[in-house]
Length: 248
Image (cartoon, rainbow, N blue to C red):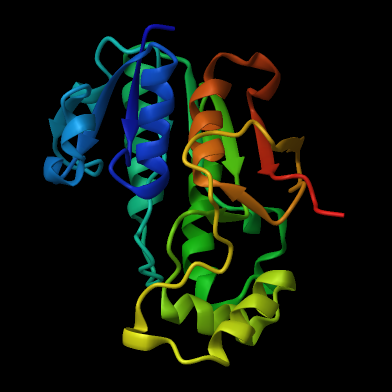
């Protein structure tokens, strides 16, 4: 594998995937509606296609001549109903098929390992679109990997998401969110309930097919795995849970 396409590369986890690919010696082409969201030191090393994942011609241009693709689309804490991620995924899959490119990883959520009615209500609409993404992957004949992380350390979580987690009581996330709500949150700035001091992939994570092995993963390890799994056939056509080992 020499060159990959990354969709959603300007986001928190997307930038980590771009960095991981570059450090792996891969050439990277990234589709972005706003190329200015890439830091200058990254933009100088990446071929950026300005466009929209919902525009098939833009997607087709992005996958031309690559050996694999990473889909790490997100809504930046916007929890309203959407079909952007699933429709974008369908465009990517169709373009990959047309170009005869097989490996593709897609970043979704560990909520996919739960029954939908057990997902915290505010996040159900996003989970529904992740389910549509998963269905699109499963219906394709590509070598897909559905990567389903829990909370991603190093990314920001919005106040509405904190309130939702607190009210849902979803494990440790609920406990931390409830604690966060008990203190003054000056300026309503984004809070990081699971922080990380890491600035690069640690390699300290576990992989499990069909379920989540833990509650948190760093954005650096997640970005690394989204790229690294592309040439790992043991993960093809699998839902993959990824998380740091549980603390004793």
